[in-house]
Length: 251
Image 1 (cartoon, rainbow, N blue to C red):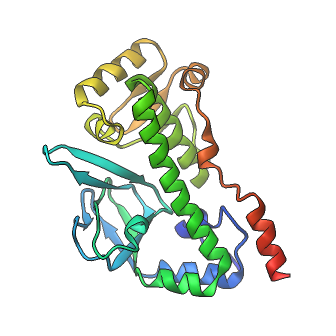
Image 2: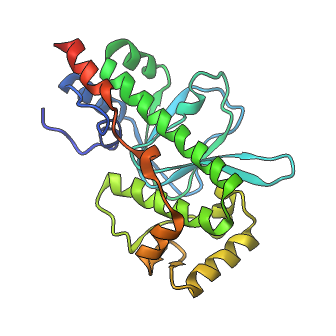
């Protein structure tokens, strides 16, 4: 079939080869599209789980408000990501989901995931791969918070975000879109805004990078990569032997 430009295909299609039927099913999930302004709420914490969202354009995020009034950002979501997968098997959402920028989302019933599982092994594995990588990013962030400095955490997040963007389309590493404010970077990485501000100022003085309002400018790529000691295996699209096993099942 002629593959349409599709956010969800660009995501789930990275892991396994999808049949025409699989692709048609995913394209069907994108039919109910809505334009969203920045800061639009997709759902509130404790809302009933009923709908999932595919980010077609723009950025979104999920977060939880802590007892002390501070906010912790859980996920930063890019085009192609499905918002709400982590809450799928719960009765109520554990987080609040909100648009970070204006954009477009496709809305579908969470029950359609059951249709995926019932109808396609390849789509089910691709969906599991997407969930696993979301969890791997959270695990990596937790380990960074325990073992790394604020400087290392910020640089690691910037490299990680560029890799994710580059999977969508070729993205210049020396300057790329990053609409998170300094306060939001702190909410993602578990740092105060004062700590983020000081660290970014130090990175700029050291000639490594500059955080502009809506983008990052990389001044010294070699030093950034070396100092971060980035291991991107947790972002890999490889499925090892599962792809071959699936082909054998279909043979």
